[in-house]
Structure formats: C-alpha cells, structure tokens
Length: 228
Image (cartoon, rainbow, N blue to C red):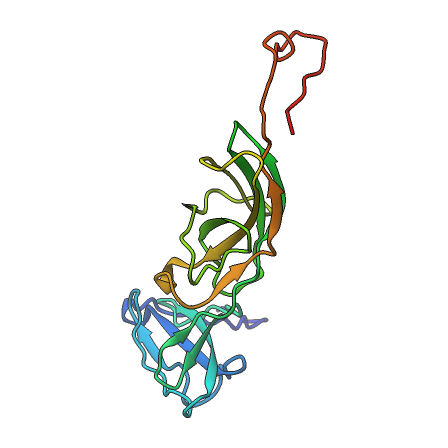
C-alpha cells in the first residue's frame, strides 16, 4: 500500500509554434498601454510588420512610441520597454526632426591656396542624425547653403564619441580672406529640408608656403616656418 505524505503542485506549457509572433504596440505622445484592449495594433510572424496610423489634425504632429515584443511558442511575451519614436504630420508623413548645428574646430593652411578644416557634429543628440558633410567657402561674405555651391562633400565615416570631419580644399587665392561654414544633412531629406549649419570661420590663406628641405627633415633639429 502506498502512502502520500506531501503533494507537489506544478504547471507546464505545451509548445505551440502557431503562437510564435511579433507584436507591435503603439502609443500616441506617450508609451503604449500594453494592457489596453486595442493593443497590440499589429502582429506578424516576421518583419516587416505593417500598420497605418491615423494622422493628426491639419498643422499638427503626433509622436508615435512604437514598441515591438516577441511572443514565443509557450505563449510567453517579452517585456521590451525601449520605444522607437516616430513623428508624423497631418499627411501621415514622417517628420525627421531638427538637426543639431556642427562646429568648426579649426582651419589651417595646407599647400599654397589650400585650407584644411576640422569639424565636429555631436552623436546621439538628434532623433534622426545627419549623415552627409558639406563644406562651403566664399570670399567677401559668409556662404549661403541655399544659394552657393558646395565646395566639398562626403558621407559620414566611422564614429567614436562624436562625428569628426577632416577635409582639405584647394584652388583658393593666397592672401585672400575667406568665410568658411560646414553643413550637415540627412540623405533621407534628398538635399532639402532640415540641415545643421556651423557659424562662419574667417581665414586668410597664407601668401607663401616655404619649407626648407633640411628643416622639414624628420631628423632635423631646427624649426621651419610657414609664410603668412
């Protein structure tokens, strides 16, 4: 005869692959209410997941806080709390948001008629960051990015704590004073829309650029001068 002196209560779930899916939760101007009856707004077995929001009224914008969670085959749901924030206007188009102005760190002379510009643009500040550098150089007055031609342009490269650009521009007239600005743009804007613009730096190109061969030697002990 068997005697039972203790009862162990346990529960278990049976795997069901039809339960596996991604769930999209969206809140307007705030985090979504994950327990609301109208959530999730869309589901899918894989990405992408499609969902069409209701645009705000004319002239208004809405911030959509989008959070994706994963439901597994045991009907257990992940607890992701990190939203992707998207701003839409009354047409339902995405508003990419403002772009922070870059900063010119220094302007120096290179070869005769050449300048070397160092600039920076902060990382992780803008919701949708810029990814294109532009350099504008003009004699007599500050350049206007909406009117003047770009002197140099380059896509962003690898980034550390911030985006830094080193660019050389030649073909300038020695002894002439130039106004220099750096602009950052988003490729998603297709060359129009928002951009960030640095303050103008004023630089007079060196009239001479004379380096004595012996002075320029890596093993020479004397200093060399760049003409003014």
